[in-house]
Image (cartoon, rainbow, N blue to C red; front, side, top):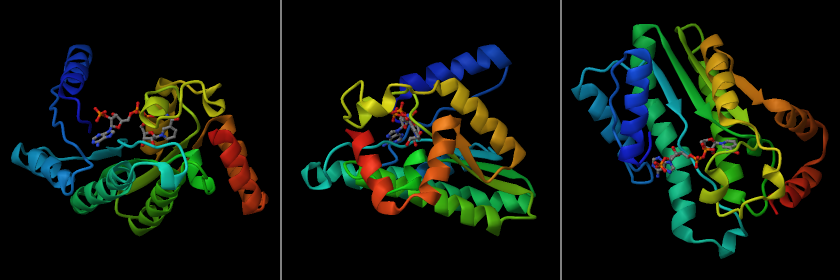
Length: 225
Ligand SMILES: NC(=O)c1ccc[n+]([C@@H]2O[C@H](COP(=O)([O-])OP(=O)(O)OC[C@H]3O[C@@H](n4cnc5c(N)ncnc54)[C@H](OP(=O)(O)O)[C@@H]3O)[C@@H](O)[C@H]2O)c1
């Protein structure tokens, strides 16, 4: 799911050439209310049975909440939370009725603590982690699994989209996107519930359970600068 039609078509063509499969592209802006429904109608009209749903679309925004544009915060909640929830709501039940399905939701290391100077993003990823964990339990025994993938900083277009200013401390040792994607898919196939991707995230997950929250939020703030 993405807005850029040309990019989707070009990735689709690469996949068709490489694997001899058929692909469909449905560009949509998930920050618009009910855009997820458009995608559902698109797949229903073509008789496409969705067995794997990967909720990857998402973005952040860096800076103190009160100084950042309201529209971007609102759209972040729409994309990172509302659209992910709506797509899951639309596709999960048919999956359980068929007795098979995989949902992979992109959370983040940001889910583990409050994130001053990136407050809405951290809160949105905490939502994704909690929501996915709860659903994983709800669908147990139905043949469907729900996985939350929590990567650390990864070298994608994220920094730019979040206005972080390239070369922020957080991204100095960013992971490779293909490694994160491969590990995420493997974990989804195994039906794992929570995946802490990379050494930094594993350390942060332990640290955030031991350290007091005043410390983790201060650390997050210094990392976000
Ligand atoms: N990079 C990291 O360090 C990191 C770490 C942890 C978690 N994550 C999570 O990983 C996921 C992927 O992000 P990324 O790192 O690959 O960043 P990215 O390179 O900026 O990719 C973001 C993706 O989301 C799509 N998207 C953004 N706004 C959208 C909208 N309004 N409607 C539909 N699609 C939209 C983008 O496509 P279009 O621009 O074409 O719409 C793009 O495919 C996100 O959920 C992010 O929070 C990233």
